[in-house]
Length: 444
Image (cartoon, rainbow, N blue to C red; front, top):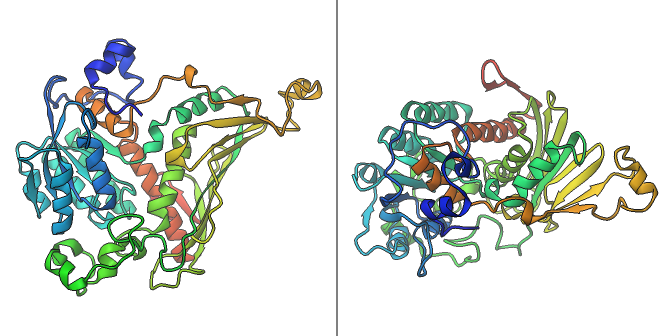
């Protein structure tokens, strides 16, 4: 994806004014508050762990010409010394400032934008404080852990006219944009069923979320050394007060006080992609079942998660299945009355798709009968020439910061993501079907 294009260069290659920007962003303009297209945007990174370190590299770049043009990483913040040091090394700025308390970073006048990649239990408060401090925000998924938190976050973004992007990079995949147009045009007919899933199978002892600092690191650091370098009470925040715990610190996704398990980490990616393609909104109901089948390593969250969403007003069901004990891929699969559109990979990695006619299709009956097309072979594929290449998800955010137009995965989309994912958690916890009350804007 084209991360190196500055806004000026992009407009020069695609046209000028509002026409070009419609490719990048959606929504009505907010109050102009950003620097001009020629000024450098100062970026502060809060949370420099596994994902946070990757996002920092995306912004700053680690090679000549890399990163996001027109930006500069001016500050990094983390409660763990090792992560702060990583942030400094990746910042590409010898004068970058380091902070332990994110509020000190928000008070830094050189910081225009923040990138938040902390554990989920900190998302709400940091986002609200950042919005109130006048900073635009890129924040990792899942957005937050409850509907109440999501409502507070949404209000803060709206009140401050903040530009916000939620980290679902599949929204910026060109193949997804083209698929949405084809489905809208009726290529596969009314879509009544979507199948999505996430599967991973690691050797026992190297299970998902049990790594230390990166996805392939499983050698446990010395707890005595780690505890010296981490502000544990600050890391805990308002979560239950417990003595320093290595597993909770490194493997927070395994425990309910800090996140939503599979829902916030994996389901969120897949369901947000479905929403970006079909514009379904929040489902009317959800039924979820989960259990911990093989990964009996002290984690609280399940290793297996099955969810069915009913979008009654749209006439569509979406099923999500996840297992940490099976590696077979389930790419997003859209089934319509006339055919099926199937992608090639998990949501954030999709690059192409195939379209198959249904063997019982009325729309394609004559072509099927004459053998011009066959139901077991694609009748259409993704054509990169037909859709302008999309800027990267991070680039889309900075384009929005400059234009003051909503980012692709803005606060409204983030609220939909949270409601949808939290519905699955509530259904699992309460062992029942849950419903969305559109008037109350809450789960019932």
